[in-house]
Length: 325
Ligand SMILES: NC(=O)c1ccc[n+]([C@@H]2O[C@H](COP(=O)([O-])OP(=O)(O)OC[C@H]3O[C@@H](n4cnc5c(N)ncnc54)[C@H](OP(=O)(O)O)[C@@H]3O)[C@@H](O)[C@H]2O)c1
Image 1: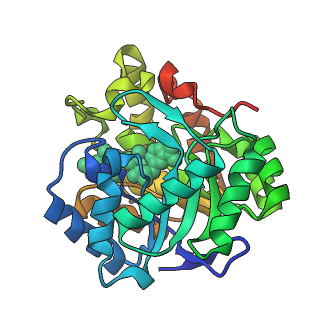
Image 2: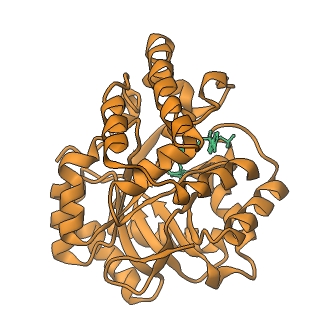
């Protein structure tokens, strides 16, 4: 698979990455041995950019990734995140203090069974701690060889600019998809200008932008139960929009998931979608996005439809963690 050189380091990431969160129950269950097997398939398909976080599954996701990494560490560009403190199913707060940066990194290294992290992200900006202090501590981890590149997740351009005055920020990780296209207008030009790559999370709109959308059942524990755009009238409306996107996929001889990822890929040279799945068939379908070429009129048609998606992407509790600076 084509690889991209990103930012100020010699890190090269595959054009499509893989998000590991769903392997720890975010959208349904999967047995651990099957999850490790799937991660090895991910690598076999040429996807070297794996995304996890210390908060996923209360640390279980990093442990799982650590198991899959055994004997394969050098083939993987490993990204993880810190900042959320608490249980993802309970009360959470953000800690970006330098002392916490150091202790969180040690704990992640231990769970992952490695002595370095390739891309280390602050998961959400801590509004009580100046970003300069947080990234200053991350810079020290980099100097000590514990991390190779620094990223911020869901940070505003203002925060990114301030952070970039302290040290090189090579990645932003934020939600970007046909269901959440908001970054396209203001943030994307900034990232291009600063040579910051975007790891686009939830690029399949958490399953909404796939052929499975009409059949989704949100079991207990499914994160989507908390999200307004998956609820009631919003969801019924959104399924109609998705149906129109699906017609475009059919006309382009591809699946809706491939189409949705192709739109993300076409939105910028340094945008790396990191879709998650528990199923090999879905994984293979997602990789096929690389073969889908969309003309300007189709891209515009999809962008127009994306503006019709209704409902917030997070509930009020999660929205409180947004960086609005
Ligand atoms: N920085 C952050 O704050 C943040 C927030 C959210 C996510 N993330 C990262 O981004 C990654 C991806 O995001 P995400 O998992 O939230 O959402 P996503 O990739 O947009 O969607 C995942 C959902 O889509 C389904 N799916 C995937 N491929 C499919 C296909 N070809 N056909 C039908 N269904 C398909 C999956 O179900 P199956 O398992 O059944 O395939 C799963 O329910 C996460 O794993 C995580 O690493 C980061």
